[in-house]
Image (cartoon, rainbow, N blue to C red):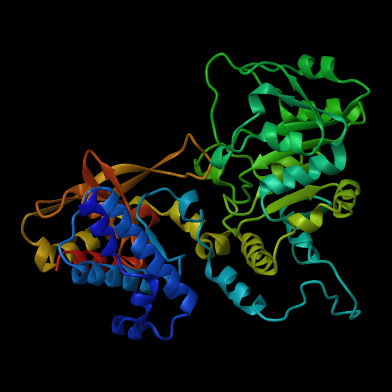
Length: 467
């Protein structure tokens, strides 16, 4: 115990660290940041002592604490959000921000970064509505009467139910009470609105008669949730949306369709999944639809509500809208993305999501060959490193088109110098970080989600590792 106490006394004080000449290089850094880094350093090495680590000299421990604090200071002054090259093949990768924005969207964000006419009617000089910037575009693309936007699709559902069904009964099929990312469940979101959830049917079979028998005078809304993030097969049965629309309207009940992914570009016609477009869903006569901006739409995070004017007008008056409204930069990016969708050919070129989904195999293979040749020329990789091109499958991700697998080509890398897991971690420490995956204990890079301009970043990362 005496030896342990002696060891603890070797720990430098926070002030000793701050006054050390090593801290001169950090004079431009805020003192609060330096203090926090020094506290973290002392706490770290105190924990080392707790674990039984022994230090011989006070000078050694001081130097280690200074090294730790200096590293922490440098790291704290760097941006936390950094660019990533997505070499996973997962097009809508939720952990890295789902879809990247195209140049039109990025240009729009830059223009809206200063003062802009967010809620100013330039014709009258009076206060306007932020929703006017996207409403006409959504109406053109969806074939609907009115539209608005909030910060994400969960917020859109929350706002719709709070406006139209608070204190009322909402009919929804048991098979549609889905869970979305992060463990959030639709059931929990619905309960927060104060509506009364009435489950109909079973987990695998729901018939029209189930809805008919559930309708009462207390029923305020019929909710249909499109199964965009999972598939049911086998002994299953669902009610077509057109039949639910007829039932709802015959009983003077609004019907809302949570479409989820929000597909505008007709991917189904190209053999990519079976996702209905927003215009096809609106054509069924549904009163409102909600969908995401950052999934198959290919834009920023947003929740779009589209449908009939009488319901959109009610939603716009809900005080909760203030807490859920979209910010000006996301709104600018969304407007630019929707403008691209007006011309499908332009959308294919300008929206990164569509470029990746529609990328043909010869193009992907050429990129794989080019990268393979460049990596083989790195001195540290010429020997003891095997780089092969293989066929594989890419996934859409982001809770969209779960049944779709797109053919692709990948680079598979094995090195005698680094285990695959170590190499994976080292690539995440480069700038930009390179995100790939392991398959059969082999480092694997999928070229479907890698842009041509990003190949040089991958090469630079491997050059830094194999010096």
